[in-house]
Structures are given as C-alpha cells and as structure tokens.
Length: 335
Image 1 (spheres, rainbow, N blue to C red):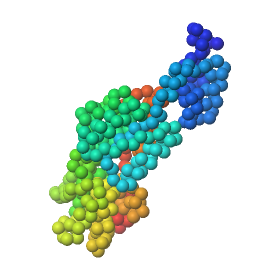
Image 2 (image 1 turned 180 degrees about the vertical axis):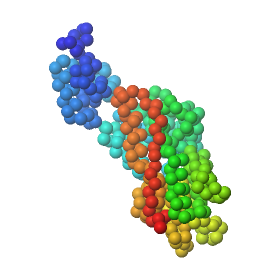
Image 3 (image 1 turned 45 degrees about the horizontal axis):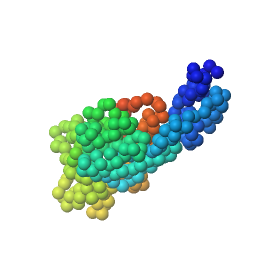
Image 4 (image 1 turned 120 degrees about the vertical axis):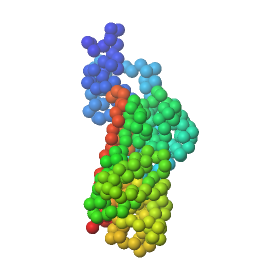
C-alpha cells in the first residue's frame, strides 16, 4: 500500500490523504463526534478500512482528552443583547459538536483576569468580549496555549483574532438620518466611561454633528447602557432642563427607557422628539424603535466559528474583522 509509512503501518496522515480530508476530520469521524458530514465520515471509514488503519490507543486517548468546549468570557451585559449574543454562540457551538463554558466578568480588571485564568485546562479555545479591558491586562490574563478571539477589544491588538464593530460609520449613518428628517438639536446618551464601544460612539457623534450641523454644540449626556439612563434623560427633557428634538442613545436599552419616559410625560414621539438606539435587540423591533442593527446572534456565531476553525486545523487566525451595523428606520424617528 503506497499510502503507508516505511514500517508498513498506516497512519492517520495516510488516511487523511487517501480520503482527501484534514487530519482533524479523520479524528472526528473515527471518534464518532457529531460535527462531521455523513459523506465525509463514510469516506474516512472506507479509507481507514482499505489502508488497515488502527488508531493507536495512546493517541486516541490523547485526542479524546480535548474538552470540546469553548470558553466564553463576557462583560456584565444588559438584557437582550446578552441573550441574543449567547444564543448565537450556543447555536454555532452545538452545530459543530462543542459546548460553551460561560463566565461573566464585571468592571474590575482583576476579577476579569480571574475569570480568564479559570478557563485554563477546561476549554479548547476562548471568545472574550472585552470593551473595558486594556491590552496589557488582556495579554497578561489570556492563556497563551489556547486559540482566542477578542470582540471589541483594544485596537492596538494585531496578533490575536478580533471582531470589532464599526462604531464610527454606524454613528455617522444615524446622525445623517436624524438630520435628514429635520432634527437640529440632537442629544446623545453615552455608555459607561472606559467602554470602548461607548467611547467610540460618543467621539463619532461629536464628529458627525460637526459635519452635518456645523456651528452646533454637540450634546453628550452620561449613560449606563441600562434603561434608567434613558429614563433620566426623558425626565430632564420633560422638565425643560434639556431642549432637544431627537435623542440618540448608545444602546437600545437606554433608547427604550427614554421612549417610555417621554411617552409617560405626554411628549409626542416622534412628533416632538425622535428617539433612536443602537443594537437592534428584539424588544426594539417590537416597539418600533429606530436603531443600528448589529446582527447580534450572527456576531456570536461568527466568533465561535472562527475559534473552532482554528481548533480543527485551519491554521492560526489573526484577522481583524470589522462588523458593520445597518440603519433601521422605524416609527420613533420616521415622519
């Protein structure tokens, strides 16, 4: 048999070459894992039988020692963004025969480091959403032996797989829409200080106002990514403390809080004040809120898929992918 090694005993490499698949696919097929197409499994089994391949017991046990788990470390996200993101990740992990080990870290960077270190020995790869962590902290805490992907992390990271939102382009699109509908005094409710997404959206908002409404002072108010931040702005508008004809919140939860607060005060939305958010969580769709659609579940699927691709032999991944958001105009700004 020409496909065997010099000793006459077929190797897993021989089977992969004969079946024209990757070594990882041979391993998954022969170990009975679910994330292999039926035709691939049949081809691998047929090639193994033809070559007389018998997996070495030690090698097989080493292969099966893999956890088939992906560690996911997230910040303390609010509401439906969290559930949509986790839903997308879990869907892709399950489809490919993996489970997720989920940990939530709070703003304390030391606690974040503990969460990351706790993954060592338990998972095969990592997905980390880190909009509030520094590059140095991330590099110190990430287990070096595990393939990892960083979502919305520091822009200076270039040697680790990343996915980032194009916050500047998205914010520009929203400001352009509000100005096009006649709004001239637009308030931006920012997210928490030190959060990369929040900071980028606030910076882009100021730049967009300067572009579209030259000479107008941009109004940026503090927020917290929670409904209460939007409600507080609505109370200030209702009390006459803030004069505006549009509110653009840095996420949908604050937009929803603002919307409910304005309506409770008898302020017509969008007649008197337009309201817009960012993310497109399901509740924003149900309540007709204008927003920037992030495709949250799809973002989660993509992140998990890229890590699994590395684990299954597709080579190192250091790509920096820019995820685009899409303007979705609904009742809270239309007309």
